[in-house]
Image (cartoon, rainbow, N blue to C red; front, side, top):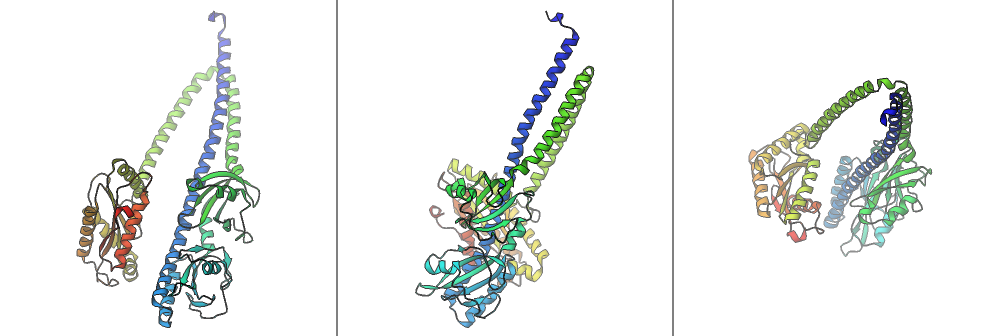
Length: 513
């Protein structure tokens, strides 16, 4: 029966099926491309939000660390002229070292300056009416407080106040220690992100106060966002639900944007990276239109040149083979770059990214098997002073020498990892190792570095030394998190520093980690 139909019929059927298939495939590809474009932009927004949250958290934490130190000094040493002079020198040095700081200030219980980083003693300004001052006067909490953004009375610049309460000897309110963060510092960082011509990023307090928005609008800084769709949605979330993405209309310009939001880890703020939905799909529409035109033209050509169908298929197969070859080459190059991205270029150790990945894997493995996981946090003593005396190139050489020793003296078991944690800090992860074993490794490294006798005139020991904090954990599912181990080792390192440096200190009992 099939022989009844001529070859022309079958050719017409074949060409029609091919043309229809092209149209269907093009529609399918367009739908998938649209979904892929949205997913890609959602990942981009999430990455931007993650970077913004980390930067804001680190920036505020650096200032808060300075505040805590100043509070301790004043409450310990008193408010005599000599004590305040020492505090003033310390404040000036910290402002010089931290670009985000506009200034550091200490106010008495009536809002008058006691001392500040500028060394100005004028009583022209009284800050007893500021929100942060009223907060500390009426709250006994000793933790940090991030206030609403204000225009500084002394500089006329937009600032973000971070403050701590200062107590008198009897525990009553004794004043406020204040760090003012430059809003422009955050602006410069946010400007480095490409969120499109109609995108926006913002830093918002958990109470709905807009700390900063890029594109910048000074009239909106310090304004309320409590009535916005973004804030209402975020306020309804809790826990892990506060890390995510959702589409909202902007309360600023009505633009429909995909907002990726993320809270700061240590402070009552959250960030959002908002990408215009229309702008996200513009390239997809343009590509879809162009490709659709091409499909129509191709279908017409296939119908007209049906006799050359076989040769066209062969050419397409060759093109696809070339594309696969290019894809394989690109994947190989990406794998090479990924390996390089997991190593610290200065020390040759693993970098922070690889440490985080390995820590997560080993923490999960220890949780499953009920084994102990140890972590050593190492810090070069007086490293800043070393750089000041000998220069940063010499400091780099010290880090290379120390890293070489650590490589030689740490175990080489699967899962063991030495990584540059940040700056002069080096972390060592030791799976299936108890506290005594990890202490022995840390002490061996400390002695080896001390035996190098690398001259260090800026150190009280006269040579380069190390301090180390050691912590272990036998993780339980739903109870412990990987960062608890690092924090415990970091606290032990802080104890080693405070007790004189050049020593190894152990973390508290595991149950308290």
